[in-house]
Length: 429
Image 1: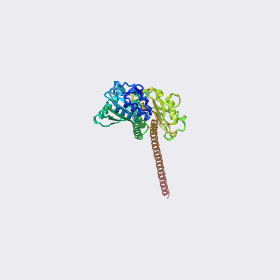
Image 2: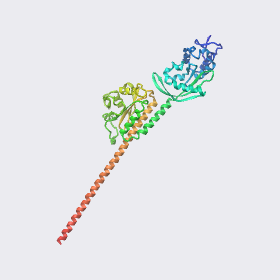
Image 3: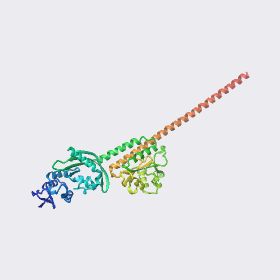
Image 4: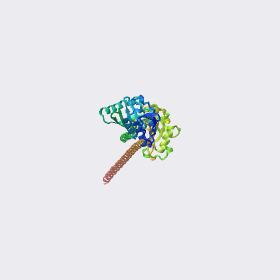
């Protein structure tokens, strides 16, 4: 018995009984592994996994008995850069390639070479998996499953992913299925966010006044607990004069207090000390970050430990019911030429990382918020100008009518005097 040297330049041994560092393998598998190495595939980790599995106690039998067909399928799968898995034998043993190992995150390597029935962490997906494989077995053709949503752990934190799955029944003499996975998570998240932004824009721009806008914002965002694990809205306690909407002094603005809107979901359980927030000291974490957001007119990230406990508790009771990792503060103004009418505080989705795409999404939410506020201010200013013009016109009309009345009275008085003079003159004659 000789060891196989997987160096590309090595000649493949002719012996029927071959071994790889003590692992007894069949000639077809030896050729497959040699070809993989010649192709430059870095499969050292997977080869170690193959050695670690007790294949003799599976329906596949010892590696030394694996057929040419299985070796060929193994070779093709390992070379494929797309995530793929083989489900084989009567006990549905799963073998997969490195791309699939990356896809399933923390579940690798514990899933490798194990019957799929032992993947207890995936119990909620068993019915769907059986349905798709059953259909593939029945029709003998590829079966596609679009938008297959799963929640997989990465470094202990669950992430939501969307997959396009294609299942093909393997031809005889193999018994099992080849499954190919395409990760469509980026597109799913993009579509979801575009849809949300469109709904926000259409709803918010129809607001008739600020109170109406705040109500619509809270209703829409609170209805999306998986997208925003909690929502809090702080509005200025004193209405800003629409005729003086500019903000020329940060110090002056720090005198403005912001009150937690009564319709914010956690309002009842929020302590009184957090229901009214002034941008001046005390320097508690929330106030410091709100002051930073006010100064920069930009979204500011809040770490989990700085999020008020009542808001953390709210997130654990809704949506995915996970611990909050981050939140973001959005000021209602994106430039320093207008005052901040409100701060919107949103808990980030607990199953989504805060990447550049997420940052861009929140910038768009802020832009829609600022546009809605500015539009309302513009409408209010237009209405105020029209009212002022109407009032001025009414006053001018009243003054003109009074002046005409005075002139009429003066004319009547003059006519009366002339009449008296005429009567006096006639009596003298």
